[in-house]
Image (tube, rainbow, N blue to C red):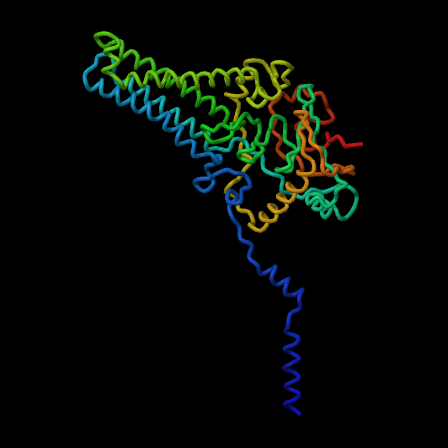
Length: 413
């Protein structure tokens, strides 16, 4: 009898020790270690990072090797040529000519690195939950259903109107970054990022040219132009100073001839590019705006006068980066956001795809009906715009207010 009671007691204790299913899930969720990784390792764009995320390049960073060779090879050849002439006791060439060429080459490579290895002005993607102000208690659930396109009756406006110096500017909603782009921003299809004051993506530097690296790009192409002119002039002087006919001198000094031809051809490319960008800078345009909007045929809302335009590009303080690429982020949360974003892109963006700015429109597969109320967190918190805020025409909706964009949504009737 006693043994039987002990057996029952033991079995009863064993039964009570078996955890329930909820207890197992709770224990697993609390005991699971969520690993954290650096933000640059979980980056959604196509950028390539070096030095632990301290240097950010575009996906075509390999083109920098070609660009460096095209700059360094003739510059190094010219310096070696000048050094030989100095060693031979040439009275015209001295170490001043050699040092000047060397300084121009170093500056050219320095501006190239500053252009290609820094954040051009990337706008972080919207990773916050998007709530609906419908007065219900399930706003988070509805916002997630909207992202996953499970509520086809919801439609977000594709454009919003904002006012810049009294002009109406349309800003577009980015399906990839889930935000309304600020004025002058655009989504680079190569880097897969929205970028502030997007100018163009330069394959020669392997990076977007935008707000935070455009001044260094101007300095880079200007230094390249000066270097080409410098090599061309002194190589030609070296030829015409030698006695005898010019053709015989050219046949005996092949190196100088190659440098003259190379620098003459290169100066047309980089020199023309420099002149074009100085024109854009003086008129406060970007390459993207010049080819797309043709401000020479209509009024440019960003023009502020020659001196102010140049000051805005070359002498204005460069805004800090909105990215902290070395910050620690939960790897699990990042994977969740990635799955939500990919499903949103594949479902929602495929049903409605058109470009309001260009006027092109494609047939919609399934047309949503209406959006009850505007959503939150679709606008970036730090809106950086390049215009004079003192000229705004709306006192009740200042442009420096982060809620300004949300208040300007035109809802479909």
